[in-house]
Length: 236
Image (cartoon, rainbow, N blue to C red):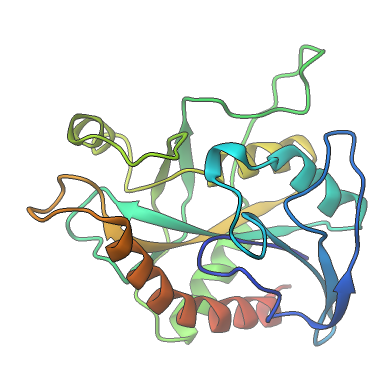
């Protein structure tokens, strides 16, 4: 099982008795050396999407190297975590969403730069179910369906952009669609647990600041770890 930790999960605390496994890929270096270990009987490889020190902004993440490295280390399924903003008032900060689909218009990477290959992307239903059940068992407020909209970052979105995106999806982020697409190209089932850390710009009538987002991220991170731990125990 591969775990890709986002802003709310930067360390390998869900992995037991592991060690870093540096990997060279045809696409350069991953964000950090993956950390390979176990959780109970489940072999797990953890990778911090932004690096353990959160030094890599979303538009500079080498998603191709990250996914390739996991595949190279024998990963067969991938769970991700992602920080998101809410596009709908009923989806309040503190909620968790397990997307069933996504929209990604801009700069989605591919492994097929030099050939014509049209992969059909998707999110794995079995892994989605596992994440949803795990969140419920941990007492989290979770939605088992939702559409994720990806923008390129690193800036936050304008009010006009958010007004447009409201008609497309439920939560908004800057990374998950890229990972899900590349996982599909590699034949790796993929699903993500999205923590809702803020309302998007203009959804509610109060200013949006990164400091506000970070505080909610820290609170949600305390819930993300037990959810992922439970999910690893529920994997069929």
